[in-house]
Image (cartoon, rainbow, N blue to C red):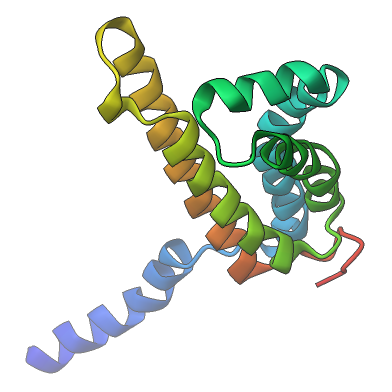
Length: 155
């Protein structure tokens, strides 16, 4: 009886592993493309106004107390527009994903320091802080998995 139970369990194991380790088969590369686009769309949407109203971006960086506000504004524009577009295209994906981890964590601590706030500013900034932490996790995954075959890197 013990042998029958063990055989029964081992026969179910491949099916369990197929579910547990679902790899998306042929659609894996399409899913990576969609993931790349979704992870950077927020940066592009909010980066374009930073680029088109650059002086306002510098003023905003100054109001946040960002170190070297002009340089911080340049970094924000470069990361949120051209670098984000490169991620979407899948070009230099792994190194850019690693840079985005640090950028996203930096913006979380500089731009959403909810622990220094009070009143109505706390909750939205706490949400944005943890959103940035989550996005950084997504970039770590992207750095590990790579962009997939539907990319300029083709990896």
